[in-house]
Image (cartoon, rainbow, N blue to C red; front, side, top):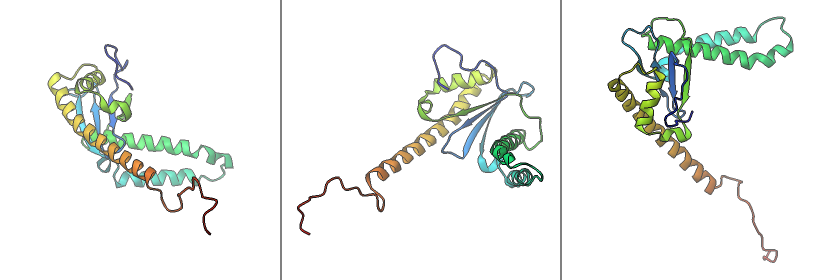
Length: 194
């Protein structure tokens, strides 16, 4: 996703937009379902709040059932990763919807946008973020609400940038300081005493 000036980025409005920061456990969810009485809202969660013990127990039980199906050919195992991915996505979406709805089970949204904030998009300006949020809600969130959302976003944007910088610093250090056994001989004096 790359912001561009003047052109709409999103042709369709998503019911839910999940904003993920790859290095953070916290994420944002914009609930733009049309039947929400107070209009679009922004929720902030951590993965621990959404992916709780029942989530993991249910996944483990479903995976066990998938893995131990009797009378399946060996080729069945080839499709197992895709089946597991489908289960994980469905269960995670159920958990997110339940968290957004205050623990009340609700139907899954029809359209979900997942925005991963990494790379160049981490450098977008607050005005661009406001435009993105406005587009995600179909223009139904007022400017005051969008401004509050941008504040929450900027806090996570700064934390993500900090984590990216830390990761780059670790990579730089590792590139310069070889680990055990990683020294290379570029040249060896053939006339050294020996």
